Length: 316
Figure 1 (tube, rainbow, N blue to C red):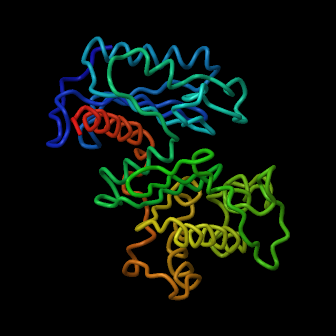
Figure 2 (cartoon, rainbow, N blue to C red; figure 1 turned 90 degrees about the horizontal axis):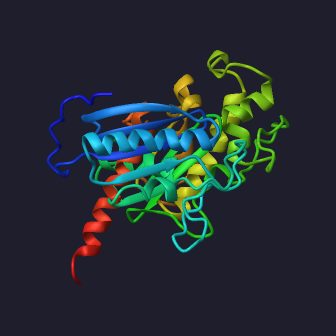
């Protein structure tokens, strides 16, 4: 494949573009770009058996390296993943429910191919970095990116960095109070009352049967359950890490746009003046990058990798 002519880099980027891989449950998006306004190339690889998918991704990267070159590599993956650099399984996908993928070494294999800085993180942390770099959270160091889709994922940045500890953030599995009249099943096999079990597309189908989320009327009571779970999650984040803005997207939100407008007023009522929030209408927002938040998340991770490498090379 012949790459398109070089795209003019943005003012704050190197002369070479960044390479990024977003590993998703059904497809992997490979992106070569300086940023959202300067995408050089983008290709999709099906997420099949890792013995097929990883070499296919490697081939795309190798072709870009040979034909164009890139300054850094970012890998944003579905999880759970091992993000501890001291762990012997760093860069591996852990106990995912996706067949054949548990303990697949993703970052180790791909990053070893090229002599450039690399970064590996969750897909939602990558999307959070992308929104901070180019989207709804520019200029903010404390930010939460939430996706409500088949599951519930949260990319949480605190002081400009994703949270670390026992593992990456899994705020979608935060247990929250059910509404008093909600006795419908949860969609999570682990928790009867977590945000993912109550508010995700899987949770909605567990409650209502095999329905299309887009066909459910706006006044259906299931949206009270969904909104309440999201609001409780946001309240917990405000009271713990205090993100300065929360962007909420994903398939459920996109198919039911009335939901987003419900969250901030209910959150303010829940906080009840105890903690200060930014001006009304500016705190709970939609992601500005839309469907490109994920693919650009891998580019944002590459940007972070290059920044960290440059910082490390400067004498103290």
